[in-house]
Length: 443
Ligand code: CTP
Image (tube, rainbow, N blue to C red; front, side, top):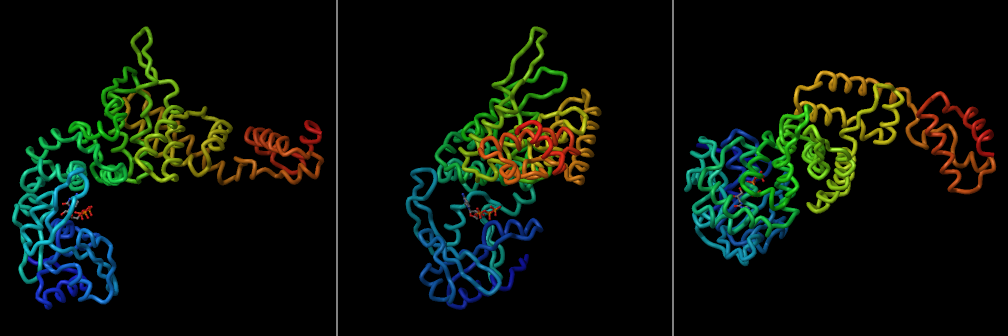
């Protein structure tokens, strides 16, 4: 078995070996190569101590020196070189209290999370696979190295990583590993929301985002996204639906392409349905107001999970408008485009399609053809440069000032009124006509 290591990384390994140390590529890059994928980055594990690594290479950076990692900078790449290490006790379930270095590759591999991530390779010694990682790759299984409870006790995030790798690779989680997650899931609460967010996004944008069901089933969403558990447990007794809010949500996530904003929007689009649910005398459920509540709730959830402001703003806005169904009239669509924003609006076509396709067949054809009408009008509105905001008007605040309106508040109000008229009838958006209206109505 031979792995083609990129030239710069191979050179690092050869230089370490020439100085009498052992060096291997390790972890994700070995796993991905054996799967026939191209690794994103190559990590090296070595018996050399960090100070040895620093003295052997001219250009290095102390990126994780506390944990034995030195980044070697070469012409075309950077490569993390980490000394074989034993992790000390993880008292907080997050970070080892201390790491100590070892001369044994076996000790280093033993402390890693899953068998498929615990293989090393060197051109000199070939593949080192002490825990059956290669066989597990063939069996398509995620299995903890050694005692799963110990591995998850060391770093609780590994429980999410197990589900994330199963989503990325389309693998199953082995039974003992699964049982340990179910038993220890509440420990995920020890992990920072930033780390959880990263794993959630990797799972959501993977080819199998339906593994959200496993996050729920194993008790993990209950820790960082209890709102999802409530969705999974909320029925929807309406002709539009055949699934619970949660199952509908998962299907809607599966229906959309793996863009982070789109997948997150589908995850949260109905997040406020449970609290907005009412049941009428005939037993039918209604969810009035859930998009407006959803905007607020998704903002809070995304803030809690430490998302960046751009993501929070965009996703919550899309949640707010996901259920807007204007009349099939150009003016109604123009009004909505103005309200939602011209950049935001086209995202709603994909979102609504994914949403509708996760509902019952009831009126599905009509719902989808209405979408086509919206899309057609949207393109006309944009191509014709119809006015959608006050900046698009053929009259400005400065013009109004020159016409004798001095008060800023009044200027703002007039511009908004004119925009309303121009949205209703874009032919009004003409300098002369607008001046005439101002003269007649406001002076
Ligand atoms: N690792 C671990 N426990 C963790 C994180 C990482 O044992 N909580 C080990 C695994 O051996 C893993 C390696 O460190 O393969 C590198 O970790 P990372 O870069 O996070 O993951 P990759 O396996 O490279 O996969 P990906 O790039 O998809 O995150």
